[in-house]
Image 1: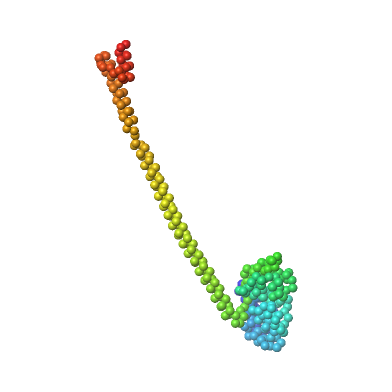
Image 2: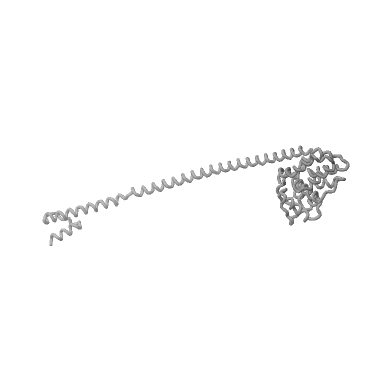
Length: 289
């Protein structure tokens, strides 16, 4: 429940307070307002002149004190005060729920304060079942987000609706709490900024190392390719001079044999025959026949 809805629920009682001229009418109005299921803020009602006139009244002054307890007090404070009127069942349920909101929203609240045993003691409840019913009612009314853990006997509070009024003199304490909270936020932001800078620095160093490694790998690869290319070129050019010379001589002999064969055919046997050539021997044999 948000504050606007709570103020809307209190609106009719603020209008009635203007016409509650007698102490009895004002006290009845306080009883009605604190019994309503949807009213959770009461500071504006406290400031009404007809309500404030009850303060110090011998017969009805207790109702004014009850309204102050509903505005910013707790069940424990109500029990500690003497001579206050008895609360109805609806009022008792409402004040216990308001007290639960105060307990759960305290900045110094520890896990030990939210155990079943601790809450039962602070809210004056006899059994765990009554406590669970109270917490469940607050959850369904959107007054807090919480989880019951019967196994561990603890109430885990996630968030609390900001519906409690500020007690007189508590503003300085709230300012101190907000200043401390702001300091913690600044500290967290500073830590995050330092961590971000560290991540950026590490990323830059890693990129530099990777670039250096890539450059070295490329240099080695280029050198290997260059060496392989030079080896292939030298194999094509290098030849054995002796082998080349022998092949040239064979070519010359073959040319001479062919010329001898041609000469014998054309000259009618008058040409000189070379006995060492294969083509010459064949030609000689042909001529002799």
